[in-house]
Image (cartoon, rainbow, N blue to C red; front, side):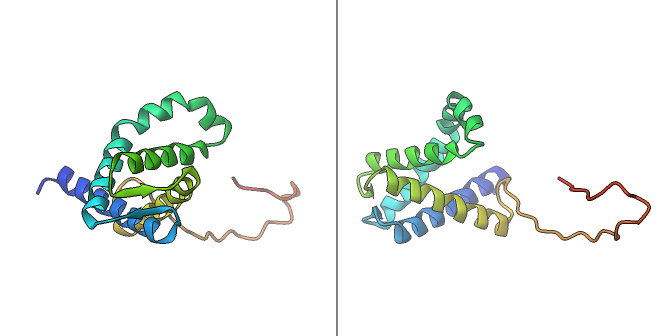
Length: 144
């Protein structure tokens, strides 16, 4: 199996698990059959790959103004759109789509971090610093 195909299938499975979690947790997101969930996640993946970058460029001023939080609105709109296209996959309203998009993003981030898929990485580290010397006299220092 080629590495690109493996990465695509792994990303699709992660998205499918994230949408499955959202369908069970968020009131207003549901599916009738497992095949509807498969089709919805495939369509969501295609929209994220081809339409989402275009929407991100169009909404760049809003993204900058909201420090990237407008991305959740774009994700919610795409999820709501998928709900209107796939017959057996329902998204009740925009707020259900917003909650679902937030949950899908969090679950996807966790699963991508655990599996090493995608480009998302979460790293926690603690650094030890020597105590400040008395001769420094410059006051407290904040590292950013």
